[in-house]
View 1: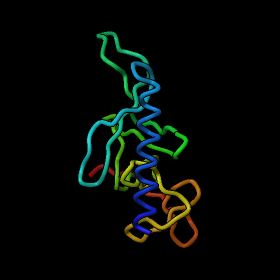
View 2 (view 1 turned 135 degrees about the vertical axis):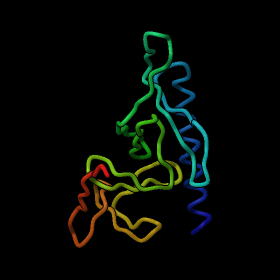
View 3 (view 1 turned 30 degrees about the horizontal axis):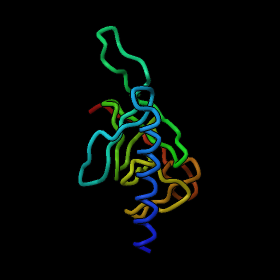
Length: 130
């Protein structure tokens, strides 16, 4: 099972890298770095701001052939972690892809849209300012 998982992970990384290379200098995905939890990515929109700096997706979902990623406030993905997005919890694997229709590594269930499900219901958590 570990061997299959490694093969799938390497294949996914290869696909993501190839898709980035095809967009070199244009709109596209690029690796931003890695953490102990996995690879972080950013997505260049193809536009630059008024100062000539590239504009990256922020607080937005993006679908790729391999699945869905979310680019947070800092423009980066969140590998190997949970994220509260629009009052729903989502889990992202080490490649920053949203898990769906499965059980997360820490034992929680996520439904078809990727949101955390408990007792058949999507868990809704409001953001509170303390």
